[in-house]
Image (cartoon, rainbow, N blue to C red; front, side, top):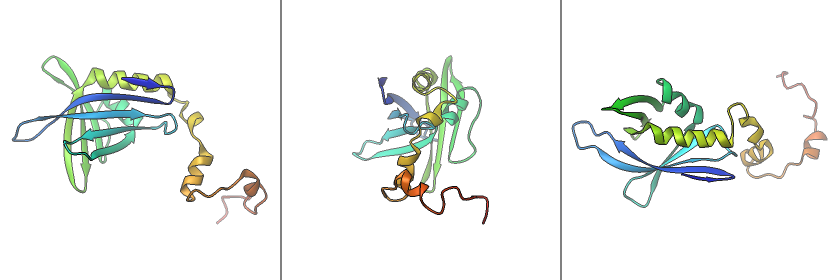
Length: 160
């Protein structure tokens, strides 16, 4: 587990469940950055130079520790394999589906570090709305003074 002031990361060995075949170990790098405080990233090492990367809600992974969570492309739930608590992560995309399981303790440790960095309920304090808007607008340099002096400043956004 690596924790810098601006990122939490961990490498975890996941088990890829292969129906009717031999399960395989897959290394996954978990990451969390306060500048995207609602999301966690998972980069799967597939045996090729290219990583398969997924991003989903930190709260989804957290909820899956104690109860089944997710109704879309990512679903998470806890289980037991023998006496060992595990967490299952099911991923679905137009190109395929995969089911992984991991040691529950490793995921809980990673999540604990993320919440130490950005506590629940404080996520919005870490968002840089101006940078997000600039990215959405293609990197345009829009100053607050430009907005304040425009026709949209103080306009009623509820009107059509």
